[in-house]
Length: 180
Image 1 (tube, rainbow, N blue to C red):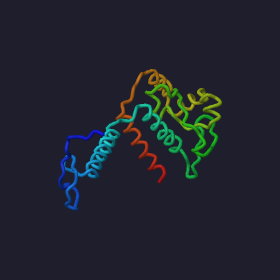
Image 2: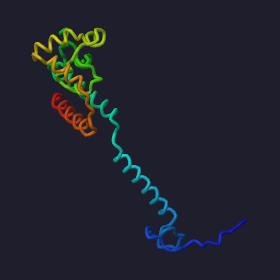
Image 3: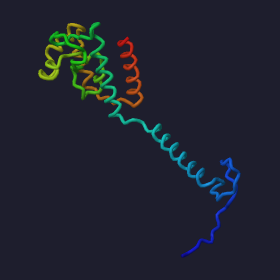
């Protein structure tokens, strides 16, 4: 069996209260030394998680949820019922969709309140958004809005993380106000 010729330092640990001599590593006993190492590791991990920004896809998905709830809830009555923008059917806001006139794939209009209206699932899913009726109602509400939305839909736009975070914050606040 081989023995080490290196002698470990001994002394009183600066963290211990018993004032007994023990083997030391960097001025600390074994327990306190390894506890300090663990704490540094935990602190590093927390710092890493805080500095790591959420990716854009996650932020867009989070904003989709908050924005959709807002669009469906803002026109709801006291009982939580909302009228389908296309066919006029009344349903609970939780049972309708946030329908996009210009598809969601166009980021410039994806979160535009002019482009997104509450629609029943029949109009939005089975009738693919019932776009003819949707356009007719948009023109009735705001003449020229269909042309403006189509023009905006053709523009390429990429949101920054900060823009998405601020929009999430804004619509979350608006939702809280609606729920009161």
